[in-house]
Image (cartoon, rainbow, N blue to C red; front, side, top):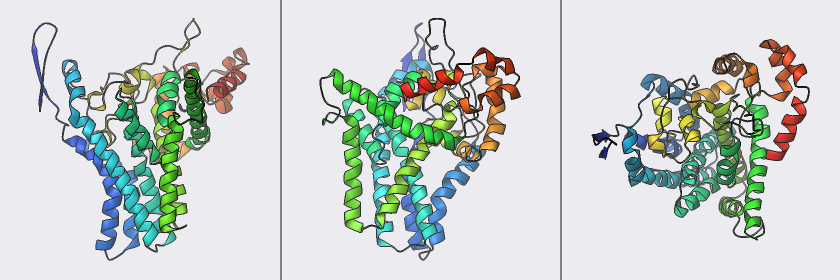
Length: 411
């Protein structure tokens, strides 16, 4: 399909999205667990086959990112409104949502009706949990749209993994305080992914609930009313879980718990790498500078961008939240991740290795001035001394108290 637009000076711009049909790769995530179940039967019920989803995520995708390389191409700005109106890209999100529910029910049926070794049960559940985290990604894209239908679909998407607070927390919390010490969803320099998860997951739930409660109070309604979007999404999650346990028995309980928790952790991994250590500077008026593309880590790796609806061009998303995924841009001199997200998730799983690779990039982004970095308070003194700012600790004796107070207020 060709998009045709006019420039301000009357020139005609013609553009064909070379990735138009490559976006179908975004459907591969939910297809993988279903194909794995089919392969189990085709291979004569070999349980080793059930490890494939995890192998695909953490081995095959990083290899494909290396093989296909990076894509720095941006569509002409004149055709972006036409691309945003093209329903093909929106339909892909809905197809993805249907497939995500399908893969969840297929795997639940499979586990509920087949006796598996514990390790096969666990690896298939983990792989399915990670691919189900894509439901939050679909909900993320739909939740940024203005359509009521899209926003309802966003809540249905996050209901698959019990993360119904996401849209409220993400749009009205994270996007407001991103890349600041107040944001429970922005990782700090020196903070391992495991420490981050312990702060981010409960912090996001609390902030989402507080924001929704405040919204309802302004409307004169109770937080426990049927107008509470979080409760409605959680009710969907509960109804699905109860129905599955009633149908297949207690064998589904570990599956559901692990599936939900690992799907949450899938989002945690993305949140961790997206803003690690980046900091918006405080202005003289006491407010933070506006969010710019440089306040998010970016990566242009082709394959992992295609399967994640361009989530990895996160820099443009945070600077222009309403811009559709198919038109997200690359910019010069953005902070760049060393790999696509799955590769970075593997790196983050080994904190010393993550710090070794990323702290150097972070310091380069801050022109070697660690005072311009969002640093973990518990490691602040050590990091400041390591990177040449020992006097700064004495000049800011209240820094720990201020950061903790702000976190409790925002979280």
